[in-house]
Image (tube, rainbow over all chains, first blue to last red; front, top):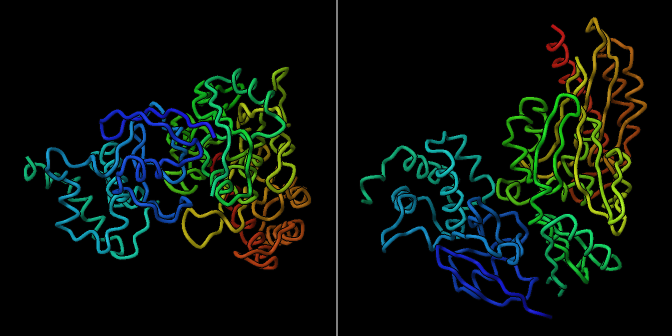
Length: 161
Length: 293
């Protein structure tokens, strides 16, 4: 099998690598780039644990061929913190106890980040809709929704700066 | 485990058609791949060549004119349709359908052309677009042809696309006056695929009292989105009453050709067809009446 050149910018860092074109984006992120924050859950597009932001929109990286991200920009959970400081959404998840086992968290954070970029002050319903594709078996979702809402309300603006 | 394939990326329709012609004996087209990659992972689809048309931007568009209606390019994502103001204005039922199709992540990458070419009888756009009397255009290297979407669906996961053809566009005609369309699926988890779905379109006559025309399309109830033509005929020229709807629901339930699977028995599916048929016809009828007033 001829390997193909993949040029990809992940968390603002440009990378070039040769891959078997059948490989999925989640595999390349985790296994080649060792960005294991992105989780491989169901591997069928159902659970959302593998959610990353691809050219500005959240997608399930288990359901995208890595080659389709050639030339694209990808943001993963590792890119949220800046200069060693957690992003507001991460701080808020901690404060609101928005996880227990934590497996869904990277995907939740990416869906929430995409939402907050699109809608500055989302309603509870809009938050629910945005994380609809992310399954959580621990929290019952309420603490996650509270955490996103708190960031939307601006609670974390000054704490981080 | 996905089997090895030769990856071929097309960046234009012309390039894609050239690759198709060359590799038509053993190839598959991928766009969003939201359904295809699952089948490939299960080993159910294992093409020698995979032609990627995700980057074919010339097929990513939504155009509307009051004469020609709506034209949606094949590589347009579900999310683009969902967010389109022109679709919202003229075909709001399409927005409702899209909002309930899978998750945001899937809608961000999955495309309308891929969904239709995949031809899963449980898909959402199929039944609704057939109810809206949509047509699809497709091309090979030599020519372009257009079919009604009804003719396009041939069997379970099978379409009229020939091995060297590419789906280009979905065309939805302008909605006739005094016409309303409704669509709903029945499922256990919101946004899952429907166990059964029904799309109903009703056109009222000039005085708004009788049904001039009706289209009733069943999803998840046959190998293809199925038009329940006898049930449609029962509605034409009639005033819609609870009694008539009950009869039409029964007729649609008989015309359906469902299979039993892990989600539901055949008998349960027929029951759902009847219930949803009545519900959707009532909804379309009520909306059309509002348009007449």
